[in-house]
Amino acid sequence: MSRLCTVLVLAACLVASAAAADFVVENASRRINLKNTWAKAIDTLKAKNTGDSDLSNFVVCYPESIASRIAVLKVLIKKEKQEVAPLQQAPQGAPAGVSCYQATFKSAVKKGATVDLDVVATVTGVFKPNPAKIAQGEKQYVEYYDNLYLLSPYEVTEQSSTVLLPTSDVRSFSPQDGGSKSGSKVSYAALGKQGPWAVQQLKVHFHHDKPFKRVNSLVREIEVSHWGNIYVEETYEIQNAGSQHTGKFSRLTYAHSPDGKTNSFPDVKAHLPAAAHSLYYKDIIGNISSSDTTHTSRETLIEVRLRYPLMGGWKTDFTLGYSVPLEGFLYRRPKGKLRLLMDLSTSFDDVWVEQLTTRVVLPEGAKHIKATLPFADIQQSWDKKFTYLDTAGRPVLVLSKSNVVPEQNKPFAVDYSFTFTGMMREPLLLISVFAAFFAAVALYNRLDFTITRDEKWQEGQAHDKALGLIQSLTEYWDREADVLDRLVRLAHSISNRPSADAAPASRQALEAELRPLDEQSKALLSQVEALSPKLAAAARNHGDKSKMLLGRAAKLLSDKSDLIKKDVAAHEASAKLAGATRQLEEAIREWVDEGAKLAQG
Image (cartoon, rainbow, N blue to C red; front, side, top):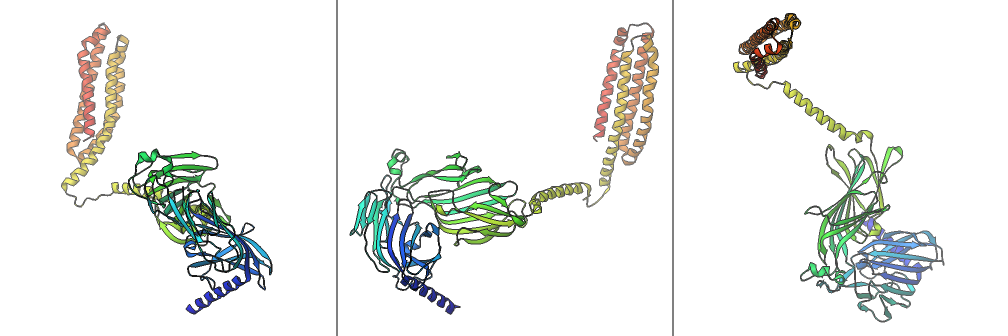
């Protein structure tokens, strides 16, 4: 196996060496843009095929200090991207500390033909603060190092280099021979013909007026819920990677010196989807309310204000979360599949990310998961997440990438299968849990967990059953109380001789209603007697009192009738019997209350 690897490496070197001998760069124009907090080197080349056959491969190289920090490398022919892959080993003759890449053209360059191409490299973390530490209000100066010439395995006939700076404040640049400064630009117009691997260090020391917003770590969690939303949570550790702050910090000075804020930043701006809602912004202390949100038809712009301005070297961490609806992000595919389409990286437009981790949490039961990614160097792994009502856990696709710039915030797709039964799993589980709980409670109430059944326990059981029968007796007692009340009202209603003559018949009709009640109550009393003689005696005593009250009501009715028949006026008769009537009504109320207490045990 090791011998095979050696052979492959040697073969690659021979191919690269052959390619190097077959191209000549007739013109190279280098533009190094340092206006942002990362560098962008654009090499516009005109290369001629001087070989004996058509060529499809072209090698581009950079110093290791640059190559190790390249976030994006593109080779364009007429603005069309060509395939680029790193070489395991630089071509023969390359100086130490050089890394190379091989571009494979979609159309081969014919023998003797020329091709115009642009090589664009976006590079992060290549500015060296000098001085390394500055006080509040001082300017931030940085140094940038590169190769002055096009670092190439090919001979270069003509070339020039231009460095674009954010300000015109340049302390120094080297080499100065052949170079000139004009405003915020350093130019080397005519560098002349150079052979392969021409090396000369380029150094520019200048004032950079922008803060270096570096995200050391970003963990994005995208959780899909088929019940209507996709939840996104982004956890940041962000740092000011510029010149380190030294000395004291004064908020008052910071607020009143706008010119002294260029090397710090109090906020960052996030561009979220227009449909984003339920936003929250917090850190380890809690929610942070100092932020502004603007909704437009194209996006939701949130200005995230930090708890304190980040001076050079300072860092903080926070969490930004929001939700988006399924519509516009989750699509149905053929054969019952679903496709999730989301952005890969941060929603902030002026930061670069050292380490990006995007976690895609799919619903429990999702199967046949496949990701379509915008970059080949994204690493994939798998995890599981358990949330509410999960049994087997939700599948989590973990995507990892380092050194990410905003132009790499491209959409990625995740295809998976998910059935309707899987969607109903959690509701059915919730219903089952509640049903099982209520069934367990019902079963518990019906089971007897008594270890021993002694005489006292049996008495208690009999007493409880007897009370149940007494509660049935209260229905009869309530009807007897109603008859008693009607007899009292009948006595009140007698006002003349005809009503007095009719009173006995009315009384007999009311008493007739009580006869079946007596028979039914006797049957219940016999059952109570068998269970609890004590309760039976109390119930029987209560029933006897009802008979006494019935007699008193009958006597009141008879006395009132007799007085009316003796031509005593109705109001005089009522006045004479008022005391007896009041006592009877009070006795009836006491009897009703006594029955209620008896039923309660």
